[in-house]
Image 1 (spheres, rainbow over the protein chains, first blue to last red):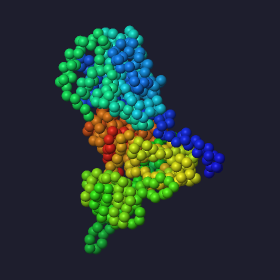
Image 2 (cartoon, chains in turn green, blue):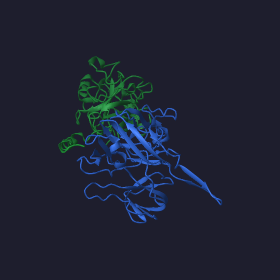
Image 3 (tube, each protein chain N blue to C red):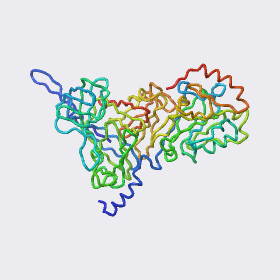
Image 4 (cartoon, helix red, strand yellow):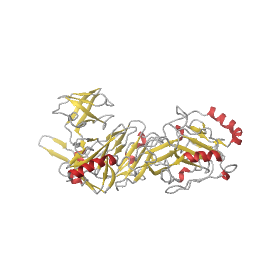
Length: 233
Length: 309
């Protein structure tokens, strides 16, 4: 039996701990990416080819609600900008979640799998989630981290020449202890587009190339856009 | 470990000289779940005996043709929040296993708090809700004034309760709140500083249950099987979850909320998070103590099989 003094103390503490199990610092969430096939939507190269075991995705949030969308082309300067405002779910400085190997494009250009153990206090419910996809480099799978850091020499022919940056209305972090699956074909249907870098092909999203290549690929995807029927789940 | 006692009350058959008649009574059971200190989602496995079962007619939220005694409506406290005390379950047809809270009643009708998915002639059962007082007792070993109980509502909110002076209280440690219902198939959150023994008892379900899950809510769903695991392939997740997007997480009962499995759907079958369909042999299971948290974009009904069918 607790005496009155301790009861008062307990009441005072109640306000501090009443959110236990649903929002304390130990609570975690799971983020999954759903891009196993064309029906769920794929991220493809600007020439519409699949990303065959080249490239990977970063998933996280932005530290600003108003990112500079003019910095959307894949240059090193723009990389530094987006890198400075991007908080990864699977970095130790970010969400602290696991890094799945399946966030590297497979031989079919698909992306699947989950980061688990993401700190829910860093990614509270309703946080807008973003996907940043590269046509070069790879994520080193493991418990946390493994996200490559690029330098200016990583940009150019044979290396990073294309990327995509996107989000969707549906891509919001779940409540504590729940999971959210980010489906690629949900991108582009928003009232206000969150496709900052990329081309909406209907189900699929095409990366955009570095500035010198843009004219070369325009004809390819312009034709495709008109041929593809928008398909959403 | 759970114990299901069915030896005396499971099925009674008797004969007389002129005819044979089979009489069955519900299987009843008792469970004593050992939960290590830490965080848990817990779902009671038993239901209470029905106070009415039979035919009825549904018109909107009104159900008529009943023969009832006493109040089955929401509680009527004046000094604390009120909650439904009973629910109506559809027991036959396409919507068998769906259930709805009762707001009020007369001797021959009840008014539900929401419009059912079906109408017209149906068969029903009316049961009292399992409550927090039925689940959390002094003998549970729950820490007074410290260990918390979370109950999640359909709108995404939740309320926290504590155990104090021998009963479930509100977070002011004064208002008795043991009457808060734990809806069938749903679970609660427990944050315990030491090991718990959660003792529950009641009837084992003999029909499948359709558990509603809501968008934006923390939907804790248990198996309603008090004696053995339930494979997720026996649930309706493959059909109910929207392809690729809606999720269910299976958590263990270690106290650390260990993740057993991530479940999605390819539109037909439940899958892992690489969208490989689970088979009966590869399917993870809900144990008698584990639960799953379901995240959906629209209202869905997760079908839980009966343990005895």
